Image 1: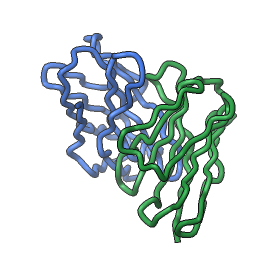
Image 2 (image 1 turned 45 degrees about the vertical axis):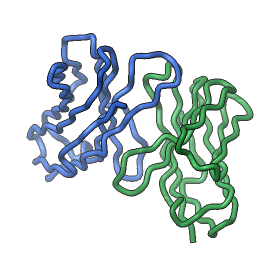
Image 3 (image 1 turned 30 degrees about the vertical axis):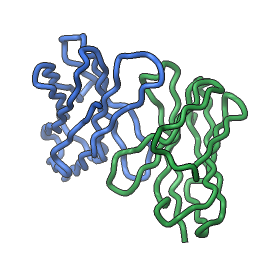
Image 4 (image 1 turned 180 degrees about the horizontal axis):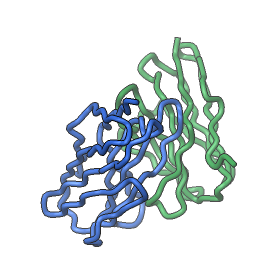
Amino acid sequence: AQTVTQSQPEMSVQEAETVTLSCTYDTSESDYYLFWYKQPPSRQMILVIRQEAYKQQNATENRFSVNFQKAAKSFSLKISDSQLGDAAMYFCAYRSFVSGNTPLVFGKGTRLSVIA
Amino acid sequence: DAMVIQNPRYQVTQFGKPVTLSCSQTLNHNVMYWYQQKSSQAPKLLFHYYDKDFNNEADTPDNFQSRRPNTSFCFLDIRSPGLGDAAMYLCATSSDRVRQYFGPGTRLTVT
């Protein structure tokens, strides 16, 4: 079974600075998806960024980028120019590439605080 | 322009008293999921519907049931809530079973 590990329960960053959230995963599969989801306090979880394992290029969405190291099974999220609205719980998640009833496997989350 | 709507946002029920949580969507997605999320933990998948096909996770207690009368609506029924069922319940939808769109959640308190 696949597992996702987020080793940083809490992180903090100064406004306008850069922060990197860590995620490692364990799988025997070669094709899969990786995601970072953001869950702000009392608000819904939204997808921040997505990476397909077969793509070598790291995904980027505006201020959010990932460092995907397939051999090391590492998938870190970098947030540049941090804003107060970035404060949230961040979940790393894995999904098998296999079609059908394959669930998302979540890590335990990292709580990010942004200091003004 | 809410896409995944959950009602109510906060629900209080008594120990053992059945409760129903509601989820609706305007995305016309064919897959709907229910997750349980306890404080400071990752969401845990309870079950999901692919169209009308119900898929239960192996470790979901029998106390939890679900109904999907049509594409837009899905309900979570907890037949006899225990104190351990107090949690945030998240509904999510998907059209491709890859990207999921989450609702804001219903926080359930059991007294």
